[in-house]
Length: 621
Image (cartoon, rainbow, N blue to C red; front, side, top):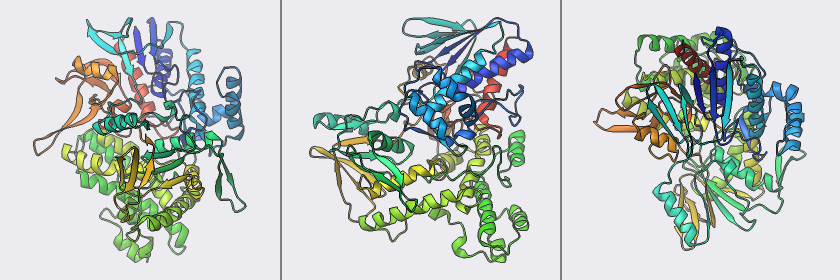
């Protein structure tokens, strides 16, 4: 049997591991050849071990793994192994020293300072993946062989129950495919094409939507004025590239505040977005591996029962249950912190049964109005008193410092941070509701795609607190200006200009560099990935579409896959057997498909890897 793994990032490395251990456990005697295809090698594109060391992960090194454990609800047997942190602090140094990695000295220094509260470099996670691959490869049974190809697969055909994988020069015949394609690139929009053309005509620099690690910004001069459109995680990457990597230094003053000392090589940076605020800082993680808050309203039992009965839920009920669970954790943590007369155990019991809201209980316990959750303020923290540039500049410094302080209180102490942590812990059950299509198409568009996704990103997908500290330090150093909500970017004479459409004075900032500080949105309709385009053209795949009550068809941009097995679905609804596709190309068919696997929490990515391996092994019997 021949098995193709298209993409050599974390997902397919986990699938490889599961295939090996299924074969060992089942004493699978067939001759098996595994072909791995990735132009970037083991670890794939995002986790290139030789990328700039300033680029960090967004999860703690102690809570990242590629190994299954006893928490995983799967058919196969778990194979235990070290987390990224455990590997780095035991085996990592020897592995790095015995291999030729570009920034070896920085990597070894990183390990020396790594703690269970550290966020590792992306490069270090890439090296962990290479070690993991070698670890599994050594354990392959004798009937297994493996080939690694740097060829880009641009097309797949199905003929006589076999798949034919095509590159520019060669063809490979296989029996099963796991495609985990990762970050893609979209065709530029009309606005992006216009910006590019304007930049070329006026000798400006324009950086389109790209993965920041692959963008060369070294030609940006200290005299340049840089406009960054977007305040998400790509914005953070570009900030690091334009400041810290150019010799600027972040250090603590005598009061413990982070300050930035210029190198003199930094450009002037103006940045904003529609909301005008960076994502909230990720709180200090005070929880043990596998430790979670109880889920009461969107509980495992409730969601599993919906799935078992194929019972739908309205969008409003879905959002209500999410907010109740989040608020409950907020109030229980609040009581422990500020209301010593409240018995937190009894308080939590009462809240857990109040499915219509908490007002009566909060009144009973005399919880102050100022301490109660205000979702409108969580969605938009900018007060109405902030009306112009001066008031926004004052506000943003205070706001960022408060965000840092709240995050550093920790996710078992701070009410807000604990509530946001609960939102993350609800992800597995949110995913099930989406995956099993338990919302109507209208409600999915209205409540998830057009409301909840943006709020969830703002609250729960933010950077570590030290990144927000760096933003504040750069503002105070005069390197960075956040220009206010409602960002507008226009072409004017021979330069770009940006301003806030919300602030009354519309103060304008000129730039000769414009960077699109965001990642491409996965979309099969606009992707430049030739494989996805050809799968659609060959009618081996279709775009996941929603049929709305007003008669319109809403194309999500995701590739459609089966609910249980993640196999490709054709335009006529046929299943492509043993052609598994998972990860970002299925975003909106599935929910929140990026991120690294987490130990001890029945991680969906590890479950999926085991399911794919199980299906392939059983299909050969």
